[in-house]
Image (cartoon, rainbow, N blue to C red; front, side, top):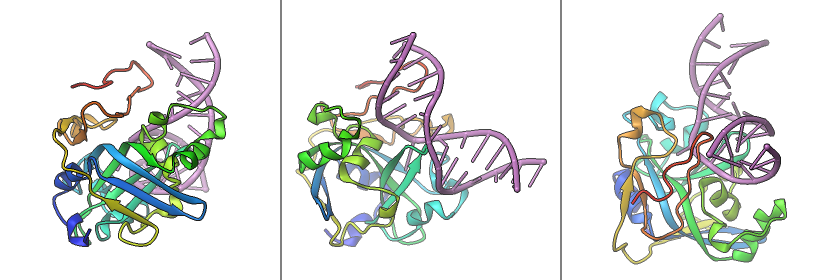
Length: 203
DNA sequence: GAAACGATTTGCT
DNA sequence: GCAAATCGTTTCT
């Protein structure tokens, strides 16, 4: 894996990340997740992107070099992790929405067991917030280099089939782009907007 | 300086 | 199935 790999159109990187594994190394162990669902976010031209209104303290990582993490806190409750793409100065990132824990499941389960509820392994990293917890990512990991010692990405076999659909939870302005990608038959996040669930796995 | 708003999850009805 | 939780960042007065 080379830095240049991330220096491509964000949608391309997003597609190639499906099926790849992400490993985060922590003092208490390592957790590896195989990505099954991602979302691409562009820069100023993408109304749904955090970078739409320019560079701020929060999205600063998006403007940095590719191959790093952009982590932010959402709703004061949980974290969402992104993989930054493009050269410095070009804000774009791939939101990691769902994955399957393939190594370090015990540790991931421990991190999620704060509620005392043991769930099916497949649910360990299904959903953006859960994925971040499973990997042990917090705001402190914003800017973490995936090409460094703390974390790394390993490509999986090229996906036979990739499905695409509108992104989740974004304003209508950016909903027309089919930039949410996922692997068929995998752990995909079930999006339940407070009012009325839809989209469980819209083909 | 103050108010509004989320790239969601969980729990209760 | 539906509504609440919860806080940093952004935006407005």
